[in-house]
Length: 80
Length: 185
Image (cartoon, rainbow over all chains, first blue to last red; front, top):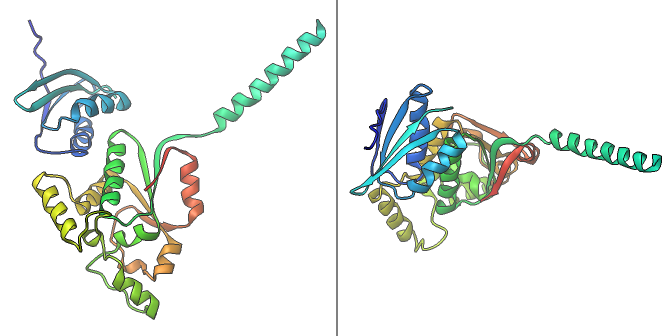
């Protein structure tokens, strides 16, 4: 049984290469409240390393990463 | 026994001193970069790192000097009152971000044009877009006053970037001293 995560905001970052996904997500997370969840969709394979690195340094938490048909979905909880 | 105690006491005092010195070193969560190059590829990398660093929560300071200076010229602006050398440099150096060339495979401009069209196709932001983004994100740009003077550039021919100032080496060093990361590009 996989737990359903409800996102408070969804960002479509498909087709955007480095550094845009991380730049945009860092802006987008400021638009939700602490404790809320941001769902980001990207097609940049580099994001698999970049998003966790960004989350660690910015103090946010990646709750779940989903991969399928070339799109990577991140569920990020704003903690800072 | 008492000499041993005195020795330990002395060591503790030394360690206290070292600790104080360490806490006095203020490394802020900041990145300082010297942009010396005026090559499209290098300057683009500088802005990718700069915008990425802001995303990571860092403060970013870029110091443009020498060949990096003409990247900040505005192609639409003109500055009068230049001497012969100033006019020559002005004509020979690229006028702004749209005019800078690749460091390799330029092939009389063909390589640069091909790279630009490839970047567009692959959705990679252009240098002009990256600079605009850096401005929105609050990246601070300092321009080397000496390079401006040497190449005969006037302030009125530079781009209107929201956080741009002119300075010398001391300002950069002050920023670099308090930065966690310093880069030379």
